[in-house]
Amino acid sequence: MQEISQDKRREFIKKCGLVFASTVSLQASPNVFTNSKTPRYGMVVDLSRCVGCQSCTASCSMENDVPIAQFRTIVSEYEAKDDKGNGVIASLPRLCNHCQKPACIDVCPTGASYQRQNGIVKVDTQACISCALCVEACPYHARFLNKENLTADKCTLCDHRLRDGLLPACVESCVGASRIVGDLHDENSQIRKFLQTHKTMVLYSPKDTNPQVFYHGISQILAKNEESQEYKRVIHWSEELYVF
Image 1 (cartoon, helix red, strand yellow):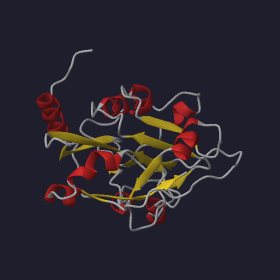
Image 2 (image 1 turned 180 degrees about the vertical axis):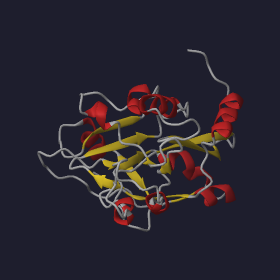
Image 3 (image 1 turned 135 degrees about the vertical axis):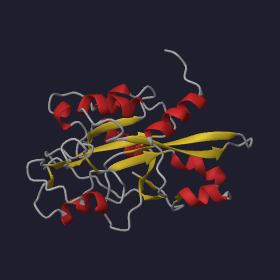
């Protein structure tokens, strides 16, 4: 595979508008484990394995036929410094968090935004009236109005692939194997075992949405830069970590 230079990768990101200007905050992961026969899908993103290659973004767009310059998943990138003071790029994949308490569903006037029994949040395009209230309500900026069909659009964890026993496109294409998707209710699932043995955090929301996308390794990437103004602008988190 041909190696892509940092300059070319940054140029690609800027052209596609993949870097979020909004701030990012974190909070400790809640305990989500119950033993149930009904699956509850979630995702772990291991940032120690993410190389910021954007393969997840590209594969998602192709799999789900997302309009050009609109994205269901992105990789935000922030400038940081390593132990030696060298400049590095810290990557933070972003997508719908398929929350236990989705703010998008609460504000939808037609019921177009709904949650399946397995936890996946979806949009009924036939019922969507393009009001964009759900887009505004999402604290993770994970929704957008599809410019082709003018309905709300977002990540669905590729539920059409999950039903066929396949992995979501972003998980399958990740060159660093940084994404894990699975049933949080299955004590033998890979995601459940990972969460029980690793420290994880979730993106913070003042709306108490209880997101089901968990991040591992984020403090290792950015903690060394907590004195910089740039760091303080983009990220804050609690020192308390939960270990499941």
